[in-house]
Image (cartoon, rainbow, N blue to C red):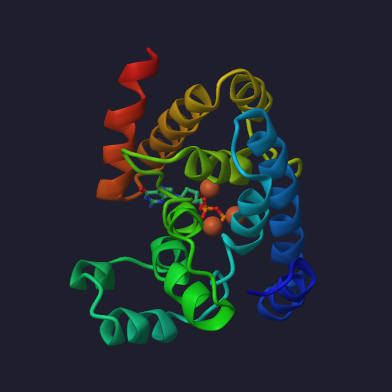
Length: 188
Ligand code: DGI
Ligand code: FE
Ligand code: FE
Ligand code: FE
């Protein structure tokens, strides 16, 4: 496997500076959340660094991977927002030699969440949302809730993302609705 330094080098090549700096902040936030939630900080580091690895790939690369790997044809109806996590995880195996399924699932689910998420998946989903440079109405509340209760943070993000999507007439992915139904009523 690659060392952290080698991984950083690969990410530096794959990402524009703004995105590269974001993944460093997500890593840091994820390690903190890992330590307070009994998650392996090493895995949180790798998953945090790699979660947006594929964000800057052109659409035709994702489409080719979906076809080559015989992934669900439904995926062809999605776009970069979904592909960079779900298809990006395949590139992590092939290009970076990352095979840990918990780490790969954390990458796959970091945008939409999922009905069932391991603690590591929850950590990455939240770290991406609350990393220090995030600035949106409610981010302070999100940080506080997440520090107190990781699962409550997941519910908070899911509810607020869905509200934002609906308020702005955006399409809602089925996975986002699954996440909402599994997490939000439970924390009411
Ligand atoms: O890659 P990042 O920008 O760091 O973050 P991300 O991969 O978590 O993407 C966040 C964006 O994804 C955010 O603007 C909301 C959007 N999103 C999440 N679920 C859905 C969605 N967009 C649509 N259209 N539908 C969804 O269900
Ligand atoms: Fe992302
Ligand atoms: Fe996110
Ligand atoms: Fe991100």
